[in-house]
Image 1 (cartoon, rainbow, N blue to C red):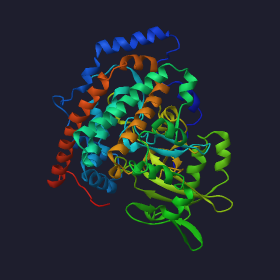
Image 2 (cartoon, rainbow, N blue to C red):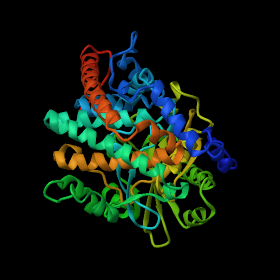
Image 3 (cartoon, one colour):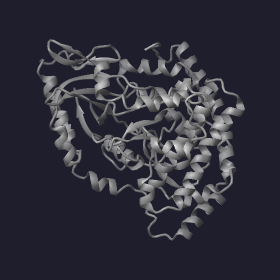
Image 4 (cartoon, rainbow, N blue to C red):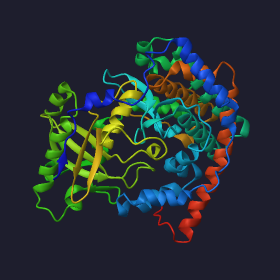
Length: 482
């Protein structure tokens, strides 16, 4: 097993983020910067969407991503994207980023999520055992214009609202709620000191007073279920679902092609070699953790490993789950997920990190209020191909709302929380004063983004149909129902 360990410069690399410091600028200068950006790129200009001349075929973009992915899993990705316009949207971050690169920009940069659709927000447990609401997917994170994340979120709400059968008026209200929440939150943070912004978070206790007008078990049942069930989603629950005892030893189940144990995938190896490789992986990854967390991880032993298909857009990337046990045989399940180059990098700048797993971890730590204590990265290979990975707990009080089951009021609540959270993440890394000055007090930007969301949702439907046509004529291979 070839492992390249890159943890020594981790802290210094995170300091060299490439983002411009605002410490040398006065508040008035930063306000002027935002207003100058508004003059150069009027807020109303964000309403516009038309495909650029020579727009790259989105199907070609999907096929370009397939070249670096696990070949037998690629048809599963395409099959999942075929299900509906919203499922297509979830997997089409590259196509939308290519489109966003042709839209107006204020040139104010933040650490962007890169794939900020509404399903990539959710509930998880902080290290202090509080339930937080935050972004929960950072595969595409990189520095980029802040507007790209806002437009990705807004269009996802429009697409999901159409799929749920909401009226045009209901969909517009939902999108406006999200963008207004972003704008007002950014303006609030612009008045606060840096540490106040850094410590800000949205936990479930704060949810009630902040969103009381929308939070009601009868009007927002999907959101309530996500909150009430989140604490049950931990390693013990994952163990019960994904593992069994075989010949007296806990093992991850086999459910091909979605879950395939390592001994099946690497059947040509000696039976002891997969276990040795697992231990080498854990030993190397452990050095990317803080010392106290390395000590905690050392209390566990590796029991089993399996490849597991995850998500929609991520299907085809190399993803594994590792079962570890402590001295009481209590389980800890870690997810090992491949990190490729961000879709943002093709249209901005190449990552400062040589390991894309580290890029994901660094971006997540910068944007999230609190991150998984086992979040780390590594580079290794199982056979001939070396890949970058990030590692985290598979489940740690995680909860996500059932989008299809949301009422309009529930989606409006979710949209408001997403807008608040996205603004907080951007305010931590970007110039919150300049962005707030750009956004202003009025709802001009809000309404422009609502118009963009409608236009881009139309484009998304056309692109979804293009994928269906490509599958029908055999250009794209798809496996449905998996």
